[in-house]
Structures are given as C-alpha cells and as structure tokens.
Length: 429
Ligand SMILES: *Cc1c(COP(=O)(O)O)cnc(C)c1O
Image 1 (cartoon, rainbow, N blue to C red):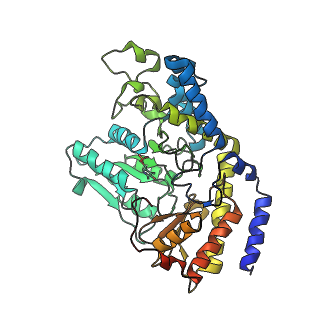
Image 2: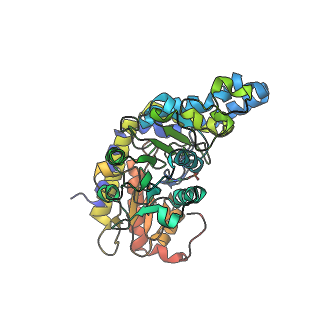
Image 3: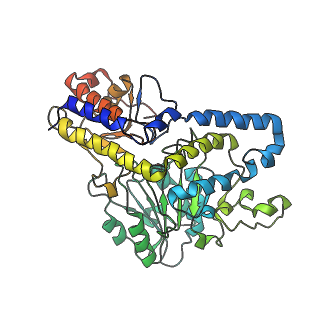
C-alpha cells in the first residue's frame, strides 16, 4: 500500500491532469485556507463580482427602465435563469423558474398538490430531512385543518444516517397524498433513487417532490424523464450563487394547469401582468408559481456563477466530484480509521447512492475536531452529534487540498489539538 506521503504525490499527479483544474482560477480562493464548505455556501466566482457591479450600473443609469432594458431585462430574469438552469436538472426550459427561497418554494409547490380528501390526508417525509422542511410541512397540514401528529408520516432510518428506498416505498399507501424527500440527505450525503421513488409513488396515485438543495449543481438529474411532479432547490450551495441568492423551482409540465398553491402577481401571464386585472390568471409554465418581484441584485452573482457551471458541464462536475470523495474515502480507510484516530465514513460508498459531500464521523470529538480544523484554516462544517461534513467541490477544490484535510485530521489526533477547544457549540456551525 501507498504511504501517507505517497498519497500526497498521488494527489499532486491527479491535480496536474485534472480536466477541470483551470476553473479554480475563476473563483476567489481564500488565502491560506482550505475551503471545504461549498455545500453550505459556495465560494464567489470572480465573474460574480463583475456581475453585481454591472447590475448596480444598470440601476444607476437605467433606473426603472432596467426592467426592460437591462442586459438581461430584469422583468424576464426569473424565466431566463430558469431556462438556463433547466439542463442542469434535466428539465424542460419552461419547467424551471428562479423564485423566492427553498422554503417558500416548498410551500407554494406542496400546497399546489396537497389537497387532503377522504382517507388520503397524509404527507410522507423522513426523519432525517432538513428540519425547516418538516416545520413547513407541519404548518401546511395545520393550515388544511389536519394534525401533524397523525398526518405527517416520517420514514425512520435504521442506522441514523441513511434511508432505504424499500422502507419509503412501503409507507406509500392510499392514505398518502404527497411525498416530499431530499434528493441528497444533508448530513450523510446519501443520494436517493429519485426515479425509483417517483415510479413507486405514481403507482399508488401519490404526488412526489424532491428538495434538491444538496444535489443541484453537483449531481445530474433527469427530473422530467423521471416524471417527478415538483422540485425546488437553493442556489447558494453547490451553485455558488452567494449568500441568500434566489432559489429555483421545477414543476412538471403536466401540472401547468393546476392552481398555484400560493399566488402572486409575478405568476401572472407575463404579457398581461401589467393589465392589473383583479382576477388571477397564472402563466402556463413554472413561471406561474412565482410570487413577487425577483431579487435582481442577488441574481447577478448567481447568473455569473451559473455560466461557469454551464461551461464545465454537470457530467464533468459529477465525475470529478466522485473522484474527490473517493480519494478522501481512500485516505480515511487507509490511514485514519484505526486507533488512535477512529474516523469513519458515514456516507454511502456506492457512487449511485452518494452526493457531493462526505460525512466523516468521529465517535466522541467531532465538534472539537471541527474547531481544530478551523484553527488550522481548514473549513468543514459540523452536524451534530458526530459528523464532520466536507464537500470537496469539483469547480474549485483540489486533490491536494483533500490530502491536506487528511493530514490535519491525522495530526489533530496525534497532537491532541482538539483538547484546546471548549465542548460547547457556537450558534452557526
Ligand atoms: C439548505 C437547505 C434549505 C434552506 O432553505 P432556505 O429557504 O434557503 O433557508 C432547506 N432545505 C434543505 C434540505 C436544505 O439543504
């Protein structure tokens, strides 16, 4: 077997022939840091800084006319961004629109499909989902007069970090109205089989949607071909849109005729929006599910970042992302799993079941190890109780950085560096 230093040479060789290597220069890489938190907040693209300055200039010079005369007219921005996002998730151009936030899109989409009737009153989700999604679902059940204690069914995890598709499918019965699941689980990084779950839901007459916050920009999707009813995702994680950048929603074209669960004037038929009629007539596209005025300034950073994604191509991004996480798994298995290190991989190993990030677990000291990593300039994030979550991002991270992470994890244990940090957690991790 290769020595630990031999693995460094291997990393350098992989970097030297990395077909996506040149994209790193397109981002502002923090000096003296190894940034591995791109699944929480992607790094800024240099073009994003230009992009926001351009829109500020449009605001200064065009004023109100920017709505129709901006380089991308602000009025058409949500549809235009949706059209460009669509190939990254395997959707038709009119099935995606830029709108609101992940959580507001969840609300408008789930409320479009969730119409409890007779025995069919339940929403099926899972206990490992991002809590915000579960808060939102519970509030919708209450809004429709139900009781989340009985109507929100949460699939259980057998091992505390992953879900089995069989278990989810077994819960899809005639009492379930809507299924909402994450594409990639935020903690373990497990990628669910969206195609299989969609087929199973439809066989039981159930609508199904996915929260793709952790897969958009790192994993290819075929939302339209899989016949997924709806989906939504944020743009500040793997899409590098910037803090609070606008989210996206996808709605299968079969459903364009439905009434939006939440309505607002930006969902009006585009050509007639300014007729200001009292009766609502929604656009026959995903655009019909918008609520209000888009965040034009935040979209400017996102637009530039999206261009880089388009240039690199989602298939090449996925290919490198898997190689980066494979390399980290090799390092943890080979050098960091025995005593005294005791690290383990909490993510599925099979490529078909893994997203773009990895959960490295430590049985007792994950929080303090995260503190020690940060003190060394290595940025992961911590997910309680024992996950050190890292995302080596294909567009800007290197194999050498992954090796640097492994070296730090090793030395933090050898030198007991974690003992310098308090056991209590801070508010944002
Ligand atoms: C990041 C994330 C969110 C965040 O929602 P916002 O509305 O953008 O705050 C929601 N759900 C999941 C699964 C996420 O990963």
